[in-house]
Amino acid sequence: MDWLPLLSTLAGAAIGIVATLIADRNRWKHEDVKEARRLRLDIYTQYTTTVKALGETLRAVAEREYPSDDERALALREAFRDSDIAIASERMWLIAPQPVVRASNSVFHCLRRICDGYIDGTAVKSPEDRARWEERGKAAAKMRMLMRDDLGVGPLIERHSPLLDDYNTPAAE
Image 1 (tube, rainbow, N blue to C red):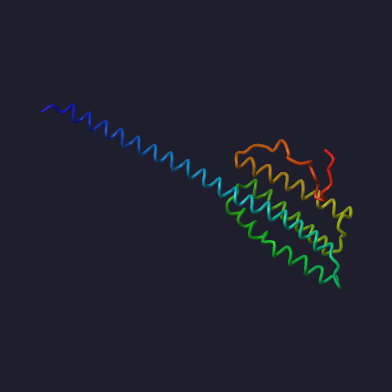
Image 2 (cartoon, rainbow, N blue to C red):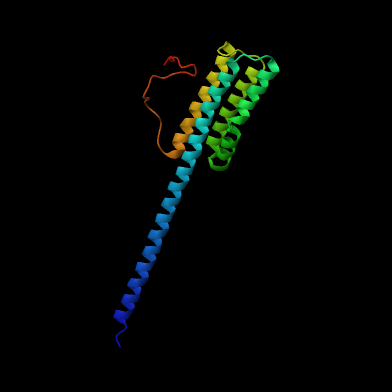
C-alpha cells in the first residue's frame, strides 16, 4: 500500500485545522478588543455627560434663592449626590487606563471644589467661581484628550460651533 497519498491528506487536514484555529483565535481577539473599546466608549460618554449635567445643575442650584444657607448647602450636596457622578467615577476606576482615571478624578475633584465653594457662599460668576470653572474646563479638556487617545480616534482639531466657555460666551482663542 502506498502511504504517501494518505500522509499528504492527513498533513493537509492538520494544516487546515491549525490554520482555522489560528484564524478563529485572531478573530476572537479582534472582537474582544472591539468590545473593550465599545465598553470604554460607553463609560467615557456616561462620565462626560454626567460631568456636564452636574456642572449645569450645580450652577442652577447655586443661583436659586434659599431661606437659609443651610438649605442652600443641603440642595447643593443633594445635587452632587443625585448626579450619580460617584457611580460613573467608580466605573472609570474599574475599566479605564490609569491616565484616564487620574484625569477623570481631577475633574471630579474640580466639581467637588465648585460645589464646596458654592456651599461656602461663593457667588456664581464671581472671580473665584470663574477660576474654579476654568480649572474644571482645563481638567475636562485633558480628560477628553486622553479618552480620545485611548479610543484611538485622535485629537479633536475642529469644532462644529464657536468655542464657548462654561458661561456660554465666546472664549478668547
